Picture 1 (cartoon, rainbow, N blue to C red):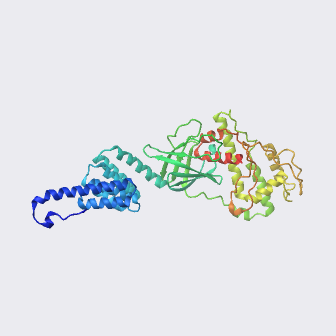
Picture 2 (cartoon, rainbow, N blue to C red):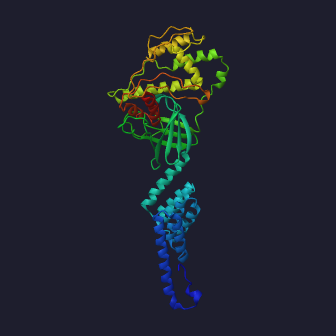
Picture 3 (cartoon, helix red, strand yellow):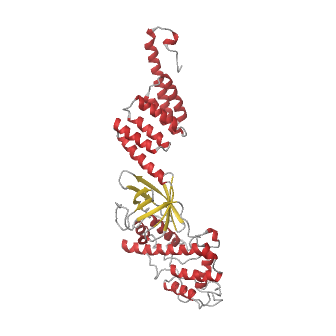
Amino acid sequence: KLSQPSPLERGPHKSEWGGWLSRTMADSTALKEEGNGHFKAGRYAAAVESYTKSLEQEPAQHLVLSNRSAAYLKLGGAAEQSLMDAERCVELAPSFAKGYSRQAAALQALKRWEDAIKICENGMQAAPDDALKKMLSEVRSRHFMDKLQGMWHGKVSDELGGYDQEMEFMEGNRVQVAVFGRSVVGTCSLDCDPDPHNLTIQVPMPDAPPGMPPPPPVPYIVRLDDAGLHLCCPAGPHELRPMKFAGPGYCHMVRGKLAMEDSAAEMASLTEDEKLLLCAKEFQEALPEQKLEDLMPNDSEEVGREKLMAQVKFESSMFAVKNKFGDNLMTTVLEAAKGDGPVPACLAKSSELRGLREKLVRVELIPPSSPQTSSAPTPAAPPKAHAPPSSATPTAPPRADAEKGGSAAPAPQAPPAVGGSSWVITAALAVSAVAVVAGVVVWQKRKR
């Protein structure tokens, strides 16, 4: 039997005390070992039951209380019971370091971060232990990561492209980084021991050529205060993790989703003709002043970085135009400039359309033999395109504003990346983790 009547219950025969105590200790030990077996096999409810029976035999077993605390935590939804066992364990054995670890683990499950940190510090004083020291570091990092959870947005410095970005920190140390309406999900790790704290982000490179190694992780320093989230990353090739929040790699972010610029009021006050003329004008202004150069295998890192930044700025400008005017209007203007569709009367002899066409020719996004402006232009040859690095063909960028409707505008394509070249990745990583996503955007567009 798991429990037997004590000698006091049966009578005052003191000679029986020794045998009864031995049997009780043997029973409690057997039940403890039974619980350990269940725990190792992942049968946590059965482990709790065995540990509970062992404690009924011998309530002052601090090791069994420690083990049951761990089993409760593994069960899920029993963090309060886990904490009670851990507290009793520490009361019985103040020099048992694992008791403090059990307390801290339960407090973390309850998101009582400050209490968990205090318990670790108390444990370090009562029972110095390397495992407790490690747990203290982990608690601080998890506390900080818990405060990071959610969406943040901010603007990258002008030196790094001047575009808006979003970062969403999620459970499981995942982070989603978004620019230009597209996003990549990566992983992050945090070390709160250094001051400033270290945040490292690893972003994958979707659609990279076979055999291309993944991009290396990008080192940040990070700080949270009443003003928001402060991030700073290396801003140039071969730079190490920064030591202060300054320079081109610095970005201040605030909590919440990026609010797209609301141009609805401005657009509502314009006629359809005025919208077309303004779209042609801003489309022209968004184009680069000269042809975007291909990234070449023999480019230096600095040259590769400059080329990538030119492409990133082009993407950013085009994204802003698409957000303001929508896909349909942008498609109409672009097809009129290319000669691929009818030319609206308001654009037929306008300086806006003429200027847009001239700039498209100058940056070699359409051939110089474009038709003359007319209200009913003849079809023009398709824009000249470099051969893509794979069998895929170039496509238009994805829709930027779903509610504006229409098909995706065939916006001009940046020159394609060199097949198998790692320079898009290398240059982007020399700038920042978000520039990696910008590099991914450029890479994906040209791979298609």
